[in-house]
Length: 197
Image (cartoon, rainbow, N blue to C red; front, side):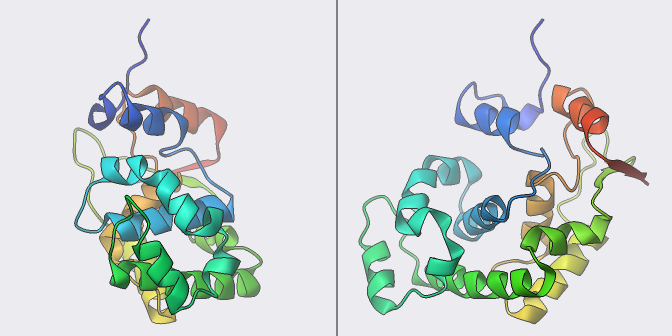
């Protein structure tokens, strides 16, 4: 029997693969968190399919997502990234990623990991909202507002509440898979979950 999936991923290609293997499955790896946040910064004003297609370019330009290296980038490195074929040539976005890497490291030094900082907001549980049904999924909520405010206060760039909400969905802190999607049920069955209104 064909697995049922979220409607947004049914391209039979890169989006479906991302959905099936990553989206909404709880993440506890700081490198993966950083990659998703980097892609969210780059995605601003563009679309997620393009980000997935450019993923290997991002990894090449940003030293395989080594945020410790990224935090030390200088103008010469920025120029090198800007000249890379296929790269999104936005100095503002590249500079924001470098700034975010420095602040990402500060959070790791404070909390032990970025993951610990982030998941502390949900007591290490994936939230399932009862109200997020029948296509009533919002683009932000109180949780993303709170985390975005904290990150902005620390100096993070391009991480408004809508962007943060997308990250919470992607990294599995919020289970916003369609109710009939196979992953909605798998996540509820195999990970610590908290049901909220």
